[in-house]
Image (cartoon, rainbow, N blue to C red; front, side):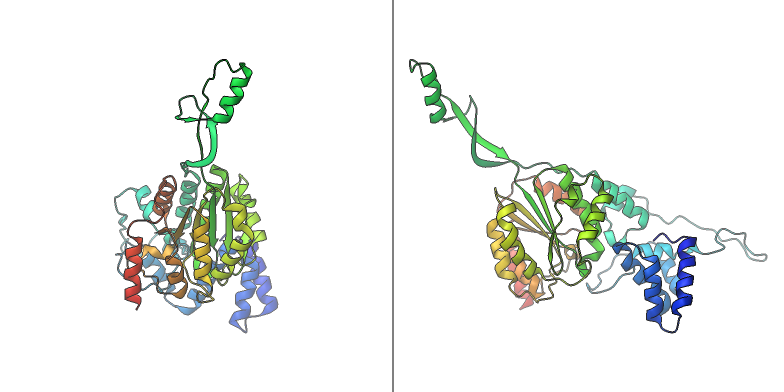
Length: 388
């Protein structure tokens, strides 16, 4: 978060006017002055509450910068943002780099960074655990992604002298021009064209950690190929297709931020899919469209009407791919009512939480795969047995 001297002076003036009798007044006063964009809100919220709750915050932030071992952890655990830890780390403390006091031995520091490639480490790191510098590198990497276009057969034909199929209509027309003395056979072959790509992205509070990076990925797809239709949903459905066609990604995201009103709120997946099926499906799902549904499956309506809408969406498209950031956990199971209703009507189920998962997704979209992925039915059946 960019906080300069001007921000600090305005914050002090605002606090003098409002007062510090209540913590909520102080929170919203500083929020009004310091927070300029929607993506800054969760960072400010964590910094404020963690600072007042934990007196040893600086020691804990220092520990975040040291190498850690990955262990199994519950899905509901709330992790401190890496950007918060970086901002409150030891390199930001006053007096850093000054000469040691007399009588004290100088401390010797060792570089504990592991020796594998930084690029490979960045590709496998979760978006939420990235620092500000790493997020900028990930943003540049996403902008360079290219989607190989999958070609599928259509019902239309194009002339081809080497094809096996004969075009009777063109053959008769050409024979009339020559007086019907000689008939030259005209041949044709089916046309091929890449199918439309429809993206439905969840921007609710539970997906706030990944929404911005996923919007960057959606912008890359929209500018790399034609017939890409983009929608975001939380408590309502919003069509952002025209805004993601701006070449400048910052301008595109600014336009999206102006038009979308339900950022980081609740989730009504069933109601939003019902609106999509009723209003938009006939417009964008023609010619064998491929649908990407990006959500964690947590529904405020407890999956009410979701199964019927998922079934209708599945029958209206060529392939339905569910992208879920929670799938990064090895022990994840679709236990919630929304997830159980959705998993029965998808063709593929994939994680989307780092650069590796996005690169794998581009490879999957470039291939014309079977309707339902191998092993998905068995995995769903096993999950239902565990839930029962």
